[in-house]
Image 1 (tube, rainbow, N blue to C red):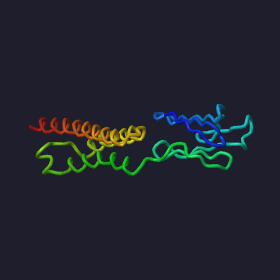
Image 2: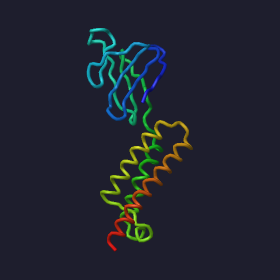
Image 3: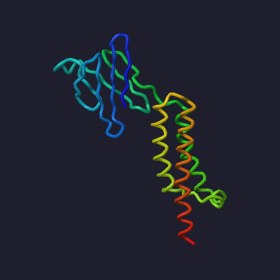
Image 4: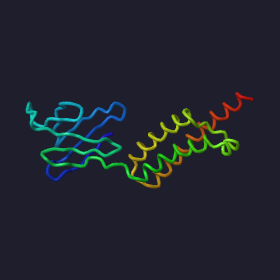
Length: 164
């Protein structure tokens, strides 16, 4: 994930963070900053006293502390993005643990359903955070909910058929 912002004092800031590895790189005004450790970068050659520190992540919002100034690089996830994502998990946990609902459609719950819905909850949050259109965020969340429900339903039917 690459984020570019224009700052009034610092110029163009380019921040890159790998979703899979968490590796970060930072460029300020066309100059690649030297990495000191995981979240600290030096912006003066060989001078470790001039540092830029990154805090946060893509979901919680990324901030850059440079020259005593805090710059918001990525905004934090909004409450409705969390709500849309957690709804996927809640649906499977409630449905999978309700005897009345499982007698209608046997959805696997418990550890298996929780693991599946947890993975899709995180994927949903990351994907809708990258999207700006609220309607598209809703459609993505409903799609992930349907996929999660379908997978848990298929596993639930397989378990019921194996018991017969």
